[in-house]
Length: 116
Length: 112
Image (cartoon, rainbow over all chains, first blue to last red; front, side, top):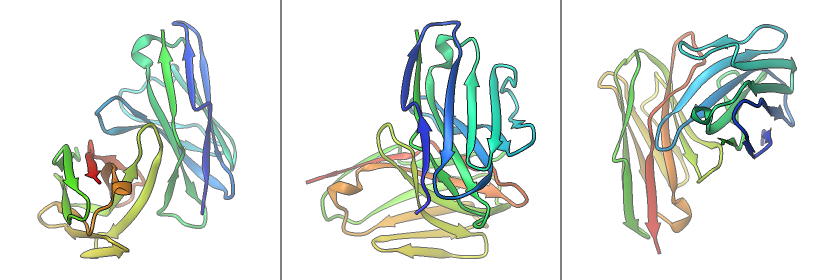
């Protein structure tokens, strides 16, 4: 089946630093990838939609200058949390939509970010 | 604004029991509804996808139903096993949009 990987799986950083999270579709091409954030005991909340070759579309309330998204190829999207603060500590999950299977999103294993 | 609610928030059952998880959504104009499974600290695995025109979908011991007009869906798990222990998430999409709106999930524990 389709596999989506994320790297790193967990990261601890100091407040004020930037952290990059990679999302890769391993065996399929994805024109669209999605980035979600999940706080403890809360729903997954869509942060942004990443389209290959164009600018990402951000959800209301998500700062585009703080959460930089780059969808450089059909198999890779990156999320950079700039100047991270403790309130950015969360579980970040990406998903990728297979070009051939329009309704199906495959989810990555998630990245646990802890900002000290 | 679409809101998805899942009841109960947590459920603990003995092995072998049949169980039902509930999902409700406020805007009935959905395109489809999906049930996912999430293991602790892990990503999501899609279990069942029901199109808005469908009433139910089945996969093995899982059966999901959809009553679009009333804004409800149920996930029925037959003969539960300890390996079914996980958080089950319900999510809907709206026509013309790929965005998934998730509920908070039901944490299921199946005791041996």
